[in-house]
Length: 214
Image 1 (cartoon, one colour):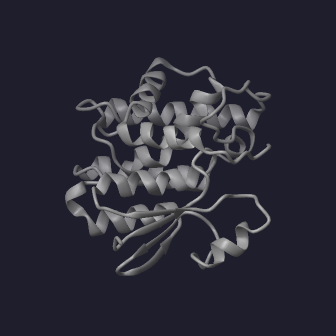
Image 2 (tube, helix red, strand yellow):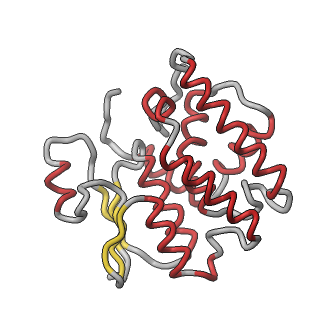
């Protein structure tokens, strides 16, 4: 049994779980994984056995329980410094934290209208002003990060880091719904989808039998 256990939701749908899982995989540490199916009659009861928030993801560690995707990422960055989960450059790290926090707290229209679904290709929902703003803002963030700090590798800050973990579910959503994006964003999507850990998650998501109707 590992010292670390990650409680997650359905891999096909749980965008927050994907963020924590990718960061944990990036550390290279061995961990156990428990999947709790979401939006079922017993979901809340099952999650309460693991997490004080009754939400996913939740990481069990030798230092105690850590819940919330961004808190998990910060804990892992502190605990596994050699994994370099944040960029080493101070300016890049400051921006990476800012865009990660923006993703964590914003983009409500995109979350509501373009749910994550690895198994299917879906038609774009009606392009409301709020959704248009969310897509445009993400397009701008990705282009700015890549132009300023991502020249030495395929990801937002060159190497795969927490910022990429935070935006990985958006990459999946854009792959599912295919909105119009700038070439730089399209290239970034391809890079993330080819990241081995992202490939493994997508394969597992497609093998799940649970279905959530939106």
